[in-house]
Length: 228
Length: 126
View 1: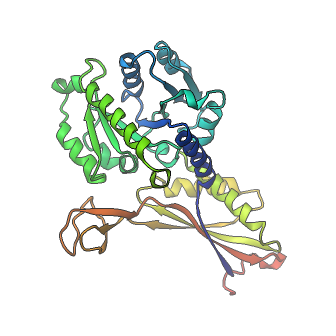
View 2: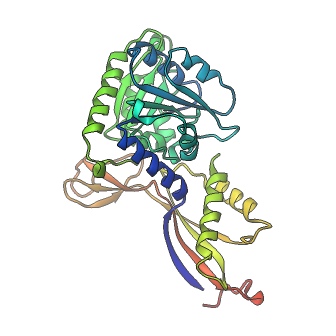
């Protein structure tokens, strides 16, 4: 029996496409974030409120993924920014090829920020690099504080956790400090924000995070850009 | 439920690799999965067998090595396995460390057999 070493990532084809996307984003100075959460945590609501408060001439675009329906893109198109729905037809995550295909007729030099809203799923999207500069995990206070411990992969890979629906905190037995503590058990340097898409609480901090993180991205030299 | 796509990627990688070894057939493929990789081993095995059956790769064995989460201490440099999210360095008690393994999803090797009709089941010979 002859054993041949085969040191390569299983998803090397996805990683290859993602690397070329990352290079294109870098060339055009597009800061791309990949929003991941379980279904119903409020990714679309977060984007709605974000698009609503951004200046009308902001250079942002959205790709939003779901298994079926154009509902989310219909919600997000109302704000006047370029928006496209990716319907996967059953696949539980977005992959780099889907992003590549849907960007084909957009000119990246028109964009400063690209939001990707992944399919609602806390497991599978964590394996697929989309060429983003940052993964963001969204969690709502109607879920358990222990979610980071139960689904460590995405909390490990995301650099920001957004705790959503904080307006419900008086009505639900959810300890936000414990949740953040759990997130930092999985990922000690995790950044955490608390927002309410209903009241707008926390949005100033969220927009500030986007701006600061984008500035950091623009100042990074290409060779030190890393991702997990 | 993305194990089907993962299984398909493994089989495709094996087929690509085998083009370099005409006259051989693959008997076993080795995979490293980190405990943080969010891959279910039983589900992956099921998908792998389902996709391989009836193809040129039917009967290919899948050997899975699960990699634990390992950290390297930023202060004393020692490496340790993280259990139950306990990040304290066992050597110096520091809480500052970097993750060095645990989210792998990698192919590590393929084992080849000579492509002879009688070679099936010749596992014990070298």
